[in-house]
Image (cartoon, rainbow, N blue to C red; front, top):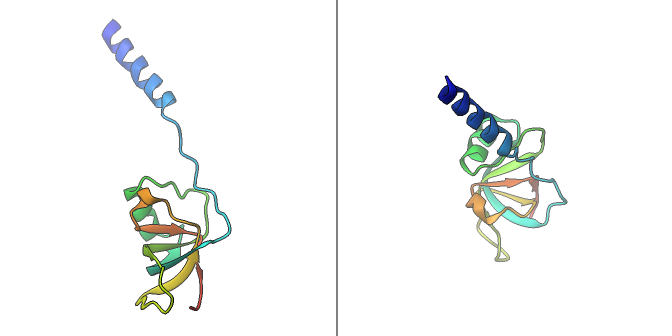
Length: 105
């Protein structure tokens, strides 16, 4: 009986200790990106990619770019959608960028 109570209290303590990660802040776009597609942050595609990189998009309703890479050369040959986004974090591995607005280069 004591061991079951102990195990239950350990799980409750662990659940309380794991912080909920808030959604990323949306800031003015500053990073030119070439993305394979741009979808709503509420879409299943965005949710699936966000889950892969540990990103919580709950509560956000902004356009996100999928499979993005930075545009660093003038006159680039994007072949996808050129957008300006919030600077994506390195740990997102160019899979997703937040708050992407279309641009013309």
